[in-house]
Image (cartoon, rainbow, N blue to C red; front, side, top):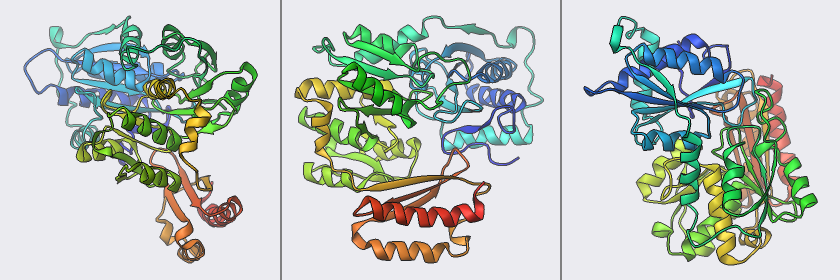
Length: 450
């Protein structure tokens, strides 16, 4: 069997290996097995986003877990961070999320949280993978009263709503603020509007009618065109876009301009620093973070350790560096003083709290950073060989880096969750960035493009 776990759990086209019911059944059994390390009744939480395939994977996981004598608590559609929170809140041994995040609806995935709300360790993932691939758990068969049972937790949404609201300053509300929420037809479609309404905001919700097939479809954090239009047409103070599983946030200011994760990090870092809550004056970023963010942090006296791409890597470095804030350009932001994982709704609440404290509009706050011209091209690929092995690639990369010198940079990498090669170029001008990026992208596309 090929490696199951990628940078963010297991992911692929639903009903195609590895995202089959057979694999889900085995993963459920293996996860239950590693949870049974103490002599007590064990429980595993399962939640999902709004994909059509979530039903079959949920049932397969449930069957596998119960067959190993572990109980299942079913949450239904709930954002990934809400599942992590509920896992801790209910003292469960593990939490399983059925979601492919920002991927299209035909994909699905499985990611696992440990009982403390953090992503499952590499060691536990390796053990699950070994158990699934070797079949070592096939002969472990509890019977009669020892098999597990499953039940639905009807108030999971309410618990998560209270948790999110409690991260917002108690002496503030959102009265008089008009907010557009793009729920990506995903896991935030119920909870996000309720949270902002209960805090006093006037809410216009778009893409909040999931049908199992429209999650992330030209909406959400990756496609903000509709959100920009809705903000301008409604005269809103800002727009907030989540991805399918609700762990990312991209914003739109009152003028209709997109505010990326880098800007959000800079704004929230300044707000925390001014409130005396930015521990060690340190924020973890990644290699994808714009040079403008680095320059903004230099100006604020904030250090910025750099992690590899991926929320797991960001979190690990945050813990190592004792930082309370870290994130990615994609809008995956971790406020470690509030939660163990990235949370789009929580990030949105911290953003609007910063607006309220400062008395400034989002466009005014965004002047804290000047983004260096950056082009990112995503190339669907048929395979993922070493980029250096592609004929002509090394020479083209060297030529680009020589031309840019200290005034820009090139970063090319494969996605850890999709069959995509990402070509990113920062340069002094948009024209230079576009030209260099297209040259490199065309080379990759001509050799391994789909």
